[in-house]
Image (cartoon, rainbow, N blue to C red; front, side, top):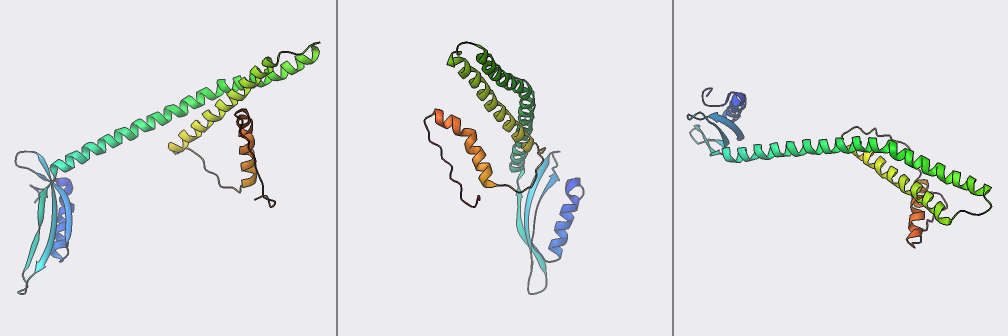
Amino acid sequence: MSEIVHEEDLSLVRAHHRTLQDGHESRITYRINHRDGSIRWLREYATPRTDATGMTAVNGILSDVSEQKAAEIVLLQAKKEAESSDRLKTAFIATMSHEIRTPLGAVNGFAQLLAKELEEFEEELPYDLPEQVHEFASAISERSQKLLTLVHDLFELSNIEMGKAAMQSKLAEPARLVRASVEKIRLEAERKGLKLRFYEHESGI
């Protein structure tokens, strides 16, 4: 047996034989060393039978499944490569999200500062600034904030996929969360001519 069965599968085949000797059915897939020097995979289904005279024989099917195993190995390798590629993609997204947040945060901060400066500057002028000036400053602030939120979500999603997210369990107030979500998208909804209403139960739940 030690010359035919692959050394890494010897203990498995011996356990298979012991199971048959104990009178139990056994199934096993193992490797053998072919006489041409190659490695072949065999799948064995065996069942011991005892006749009226007390003699025990083993009936079963022995199949060469080398081609199937080779295909499984190829698929497994492809799966590993795909998972590795996916991990690299996730890590890249996390890195890029982190790098983008800093300059984008600066843009958003300066946009808010600009809007405030325009208001103060307009108070000192004898006339009002064109409405478009305020609209442009507001648009920069709102769009950059929207991008910041998107980048933050991508960063958090990447951390979750890489198993780096820190989960916290705490009590939540559904009404407050929904209200905040509604207010977050209210302005965008109104710009599209949509009416957004939020009705809260008296209990606040």
